[in-house]
Image 1 (tube, rainbow, N blue to C red):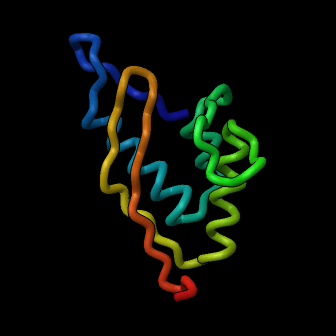
Image 2 (tube, rainbow, N blue to C red; image 1 turned 180 degrees about the horizontal axis):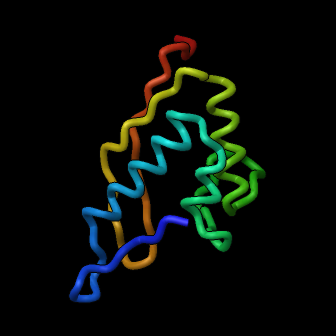
Length: 103
């Protein structure tokens, strides 16, 4: 599992952590590699804003959402535009593009 890293002064190493988040988003959503959930998310991860109604709030919910998105939009691409790290909470905002989206 990828680990967030700490700077020498005990703070978060935001540059490395942003890279990890970008890799996770690209691997899971753009490449469709559902095993990224196992490599990047702690088994105790709780998603406080699940992407789908009635989905599990842990890693399995993220996997289900990614699988659904990829099935609906096989040429989906996510570009990690912004990420912020706050203590142990990590949130990411990405701007997806789905060329096959219904207009």
